[in-house]
Image 1: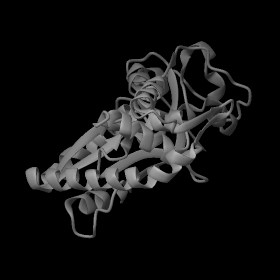
Image 2: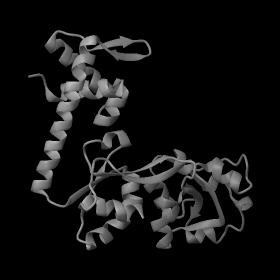
Image 3: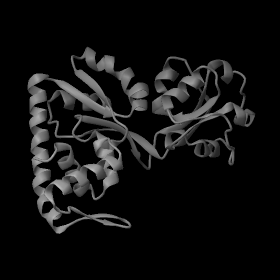
Length: 271
């Protein structure tokens, strides 16, 4: 039998229509997906994909057998979930990014566990990678009513700032991605064209820690900063917020029923 990893790569690439989305879902690189498929095609002596300049497409053979593999992997995932339920009854896995896990989910875990719920975070890089590894997912999603963007700073630094116009660009750090959208917040604060010149972080958790330690002003989605705000480690500046482009969403990744532990966790987190 060909390697299971190669068969899984074929099913994911065929279902999702490309090697890159398959790699995201499987948590590997596109090169790894390509290597798995080459191994599979060589072992079987058949081409499963047509490689084109703008992507790939299933061959006739690949298209005919793909539904069987999708059904087989769905059955395997269902069997694994049943095994997990038997081995660890009541366990609820929540897939999310490291930043959301640290800044938003972790402060809520003790309350869930106090209710007798067994909750385990599963760290993934993207929503696509959450498939088949968890019961629930917590991710930012595009939304017309996104999470508010606010500017935060340490209490000591905040006391030196009287208005948005008092901001020093060199004292303002950046956070990559929509959850650190300085232009949106700056426009709401009447500072159109304002550009921070401080360090730029890719991790919201690190950027927020830096802000709490007095490294500078940070624009960040409010749900990520709320625990630090409640603890007084940072303060929101100037009473200014701007609507973000994405909202934090808690959703099931599989059928959780109506009275299961996962359904109870979903109800609490989604409230």
